Image (cartoon, rainbow, N blue to C red; front, side, top):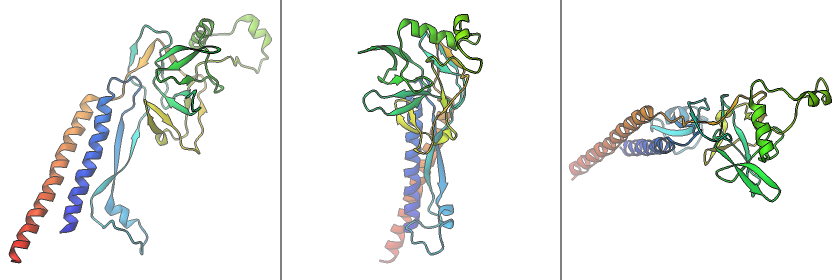
Length: 264
């Protein structure tokens, strides 16, 4: 009987955790570059069956489910035109801009490309709304002086070619290594961990990979990946599952009360 109480309460708690994921997705429906999360559940029955034969655990077979993890898909969403030439959108899946916190030096990654020019002691740099530096293909901050911005925008064009004088100075096997806006990817993007502000960090054993010839468009921003219709359907399902779990607890309580009354 106590197991039915526990199973119902566990189901209700799991539904509350899923509702938190759904509410976060809806709250970021207007956040450019946001990728919604999906809750993944695991059956506790399978968890116990996969345990060792003599394992001592408080989890019992048939005790419902638990939320194991959340994951995101980093697909390309619709684009919104802007009036700023330093708004960018990555048109490649599983690709991110590399950022660096000038205070803590922490490296993070994002698909949000709403940048601006920020003045520092030695000049202007390309930065995010949160005050983080945007890095180039060499992991160095991108300078945002007017000539730098113009050259960077030229390099993003498909038909860009170095000037004739520059071509003569470069060897045949060398490429133009001037600072440019770059995108990075990972061997397993699903393992990226969200740190808030639409930014992610990889596990310690996963290194970023520079995307060669990344398709980055200027003057546009990638919309949020939240689908209102899907999230509303998931919310209704979650609410119903929550009510059924509570009914299970209430029914178990009524049965327990009946048994106690029969005992006198």
